[in-house]
Length: 270
Image (cartoon, rainbow, N blue to C red):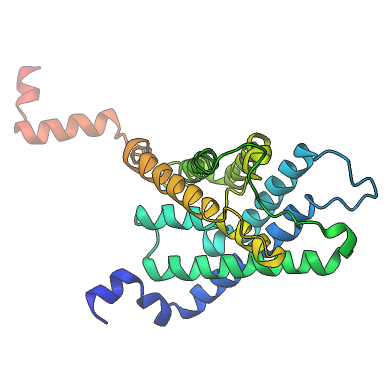
C-alpha cells in the first residue's frame, strides 16, 4: 500500500477492518438513538395540540441522548455522532479521510433510521414534522447560518477540550460535558433554527418528513463552526504535555556522586 493510501486511511479497511466495522456500527446506533429519543421529544403526542413547545424538555432530551450514547460507544468510535465533530477531527489530523467519510455516511443512515422508527411508532395524526428543523419566525438564512455556526463551534470546541490527551482527568466527565453542551445549545437556539447542531440529525428528520427547506444551513453552519472550533483549540488551547514525576535520590547518594566526579577532593577540603 502506497504512502498516499496510508494517509487517506486505506490501511484501516484492510488491517483494521474489524475495528472500523465496530466503529461504524457504533456511530449508526448512536445516531439512531439520538433521532429516536431527541426528535421524539419534539412530537406532541398530547391531544392538546396547541400547547407551546417545551424547550427545556427538548434540550434535556437531546442532551441526555448524546450523554448516554457517548458513554456507551465513545471507546469504540470516539463518540462523534455528528458530521461537524467528524469534520473537526479530520481537519486537525485526529482521524483519516476515509474513516471520516464512512462516519458521515453511517451517521446520516442512523439518523434516518431513528426518524423512521419514530414515524412508525407515532400515530399519524400526532406525528407532525417529526422534529424537523426549520428557521424561526423572521429569522433570515444568514442569521440561521450564524446560529448553527456557533452551535457547531461550541460543541466541537468543548469536545476537543474534554478529549485533550494531555488532560486525562477530564476524560471521565467528557460524556456529561458534551451532553450538557448539547443541552445548552438547544436552550438558546430551538426558536431560532430548531437547534440542529448536527447535520446528520437534521438530515434524518428532513428525509423522513420530506422537508428540505433551508437544509443547506444545517450542513454548512455546524461543519464550518466545528472546523473553526477544532482548529482554534488545537492551535491555541491544547494543554501542555504532562512531565513525568521527578525522581529524587538520597542525599548520601548525591554526596558519593560528587566525590566520584571530584576525584575525592571534597574530603581534602573538609
